[in-house]
Length: 138
View 1 (cartoon, rainbow, N blue to C red):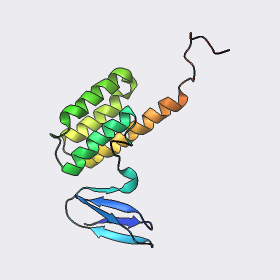
View 2 (view 1 turned 60 degrees about the vertical axis):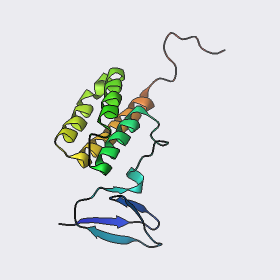
View 3 (view 1 turned 135 degrees about the horizontal axis):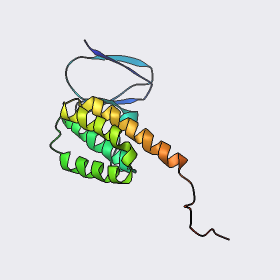
């Protein structure tokens, strides 16, 4: 069964090691075979991975694109361990990512990493702007 992808005008898509750029009209593609497929909006770069959860996502993304966990495994576990120390409430989400990686389900691990980014953003948006006990500016 082929993967069906609909692209907006000008939208980019990564398929394997190639970037496909759509023309000026909506397009539907059917992709058969085994290759990593990511929409432009789901691709992070080193520059756009500007939070701890996004850096975890980037490590998983690299595993998915390369279809090899070995290349970024050490960096991934370092990032994950630091994240759990800072945000213990994210342990369940991180365990989901780990389980998907260990079972070879790298696309599912990537999706779980997106949920970690959403969780991180939720925490940031609900964090107080001032820490209790710190003097206020006058």
